[in-house]
Image 1 (tube, rainbow, N blue to C red):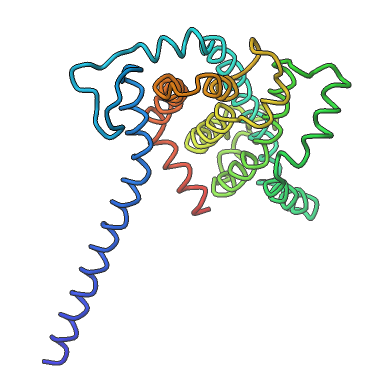
Image 2: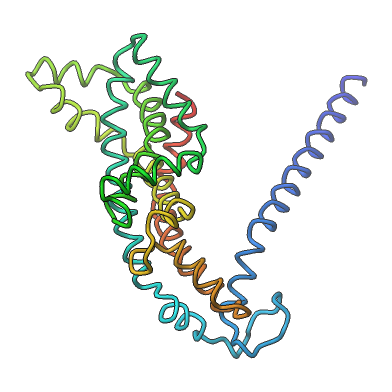
Amino acid sequence: MPETMTSQRIARTSSALTSTKWVFLAIVVVVQLTPFYLAVTTAFKSITDRSSLWIPPIGDATLDNFRTAMTEGHLVWAIENGLVVTIIGTLLTCVVGAMAAYPLARRTSKLNSVVGLAMLGMLMVPPLSILVPLYTMLARVGLLNTFGGIILVLTTLQLPLAIFLFTQFMRGLPNSLEEAASIDGAGLFTTFVLVVLPSLKPVIATVTILTATNVWNEFALSSYILTTPEMRTLAPAAASFFSAQGNNFGAAAAAALVGLLPILIAYLFLQKYFVKGALAGAEK
């Protein structure tokens, strides 16, 4: 009898913990989705609509705010600039990060351990703390207000995390295929490209999403490095448009949704690989 009562007590406790967990997750989801819901309801309302933000514009939804954001906010330029910076920056981060992580994962030495710790240390450095010397250096070499300058800066800032993720993932890969390729006469670079790189799809997807999201949403450094409206990426352009609109919150919300859409689409297509790569990197 005591064992039965203990089992029932454990079952009730487990059920209560499960219910509490689901309630907590539901609250987190609601809190996270509330700003998105308010942005959607606001973006599709006309500027004369004074109804509550919580009430969706059923029957009288309009796209005028999106037209205003695209034309007056020059978001078309900003989106094109953002795509150029994001695509090139993400590609460079994946390529350079994977190549830098390969020797760190395959060769165990004190130097590689120091380099790995240095990569982790760089993750803790706030980007704005190096703004003044960074701005001075870019001005001296003529890279201020250029795509090359902002791509170089953002790629450098994303590399420590990318190298860390690639290194952790590669350490869990077996050496047998690489040894077989070496026996067949393949060089180090050939082995990396033909054997190792195809095995990195999950972590490449993880690095791609993280890097693309960070570069696409980057605001602080881009605001200082890209100084003219025709060179701005989406985040600085949207912020400038928002400050100029005053009380037109619908247009500002539309600009925010336009900036969110590309990253949302990319995540929906790559989420399977993103989760797989993140879990694999954590396990290894």
